[in-house]
Length: 113
Ligand code: 5GP
Ligand code: ZN
Image (cartoon, rainbow, N blue to C red; front, side, top):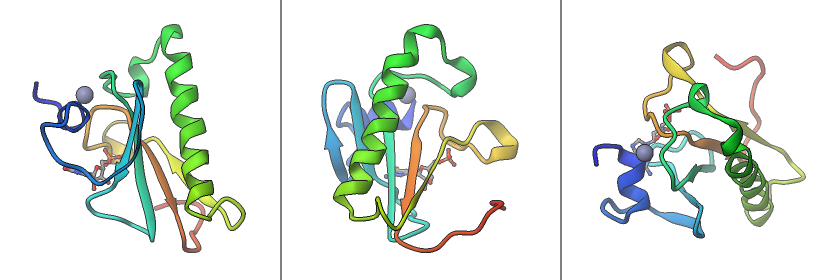
């Protein structure tokens, strides 16, 4: 198994976990870009948003709702937070196992760089 986030999900590589259940795992980004920077991932391998099928609707919904729930526990629901799925080269995707970045705890600019 070569996928980094599959290996984290399997417990082969340590991560600072903030949530896990049977389907979803969330852990702190190793190189945080804000006071809160959590990655929310499905345990099941999906390489990118380009690979989603109808059968993935449930897990994508779980990932998004989990990000919002974690934002609430971090106390940034009201102040605001950003959620990002990077896809492929120009967006800067570096790990090809879908992950929702949950970023918050500071003011952010729009449009992103
Ligand atoms: P991407 O660039 O693919 O959207 O995001 C990948 C993210 O994974 C980056 O923010 C990067 O800091 C994070 N990351 C890469 N390797 C590791 C790791 O081994 N552990 C953790 N917790 N995060 C990682
Ligand atoms: Zn994977």
